[in-house]
Length: 279
Image (cartoon, rainbow, N blue to C red; front, top):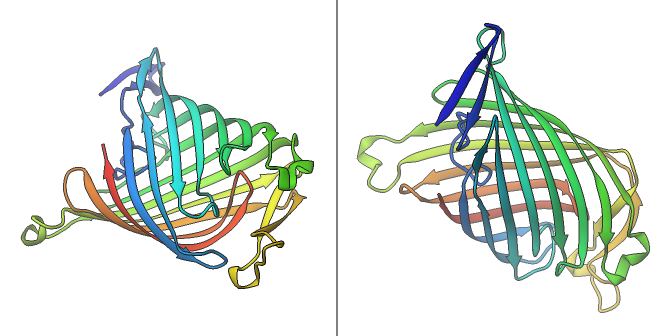
């Protein structure tokens, strides 16, 4: 549902009680998401995980607000698994009646990020501006820019000497998706196919802890799984996916992930198979 009001004949402001981007249903927009996953990749052992997220969006004047909990529990504690994110998102849309942009979406999100048995902890405030571009029946593009600021408030004893660093990042993201309904003859087994690319770049303005993995074949009892150092090197993170919607709430997805993301900026180069439930 969208409630909109004109402003000086030039723009529309709106409140939305469920995300209404012309974007296929996915992990970001689902109120409830549960996935059983299996992954394999460079510098890691085969991994099995339960990936789940819950959020509840409500109207707050011209904004919507949504507390959320995001958890990944896995058999191998590496490459972004065994982590949790607790946050509260505030979101507002502004729509335009003319020009190349359909509108803008503003997001403000304070979060606490937890990893490695909840011992590694970051407190981060994120602010982004998303650009709503014209879309077609089959194609959607969503770019955004923003900032992340906060502080590390805990690290494992293996690299605790680096803890309490400040977090200052510039961030840019682009999400592109192509989607199709399948032929009626296939719809009892398959309803919808989406191919998407979600790319994020971060420019670190302060030194943060950086993990360099040790390949499993070179690991010893004393080497650990990675080496650690502070770095302000720019980071990128890309997820390419093929999602097949099998029924109203169930699907299967094949993903390729490359790059680094907080909390430890562990390097990912992996393929993941997911069986998903989204609502």
